[in-house]
Length: 117
View 1: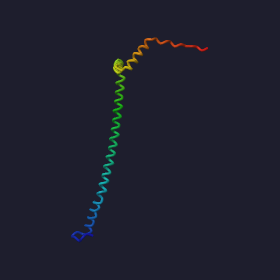
View 2: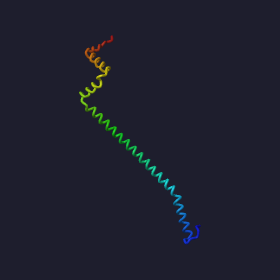
View 3: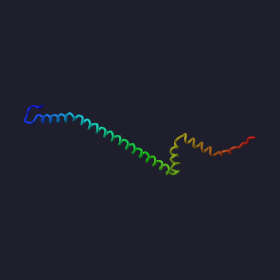
View 4: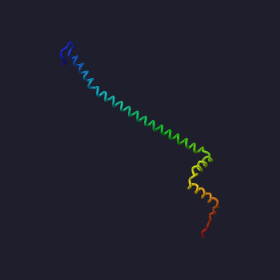
């Protein structure tokens, strides 16, 4: 019991015990709050990661679709011009083109059908 005072000793003891209990519970309460905040933060970061992946997937799909539409809408003349610009200055490509031109100059013989018997 507490020292004799004007207040009843049981009252001062109960107040002291309540204060000690509050002080003893404080670290546990603080740690529980830290764990709750850490769990919430980890959950939100996972949600943000998933949302970012979905956004990047949508952007990739949209980009691919736009590129395919662009390729399909490209006129044939522009395609031929672009191919010509790529192959011009390339010695191997020019040699292959000349060889192709020479081979087209000669008619291909008709296939011979030989019968057995």
